[in-house]
Image (cartoon, rainbow, N blue to C red; front, side, top):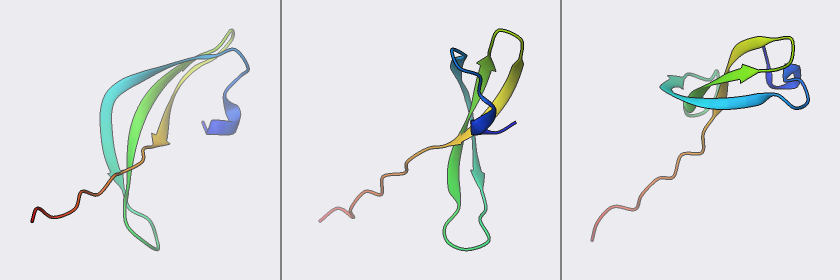
Length: 58
């Protein structure tokens, strides 16, 4: 299932599962898994998370 398949009014519950997904070009992206529960459907979805890079200490 994809982001566009989320029914209106569905409840998204974040889970503690994280993964790094490789991309064809560029850096890998960190993703978090969500449990999606709608009126007639239940499925799991991976969503991209923003990654903040810290500066090196002085």
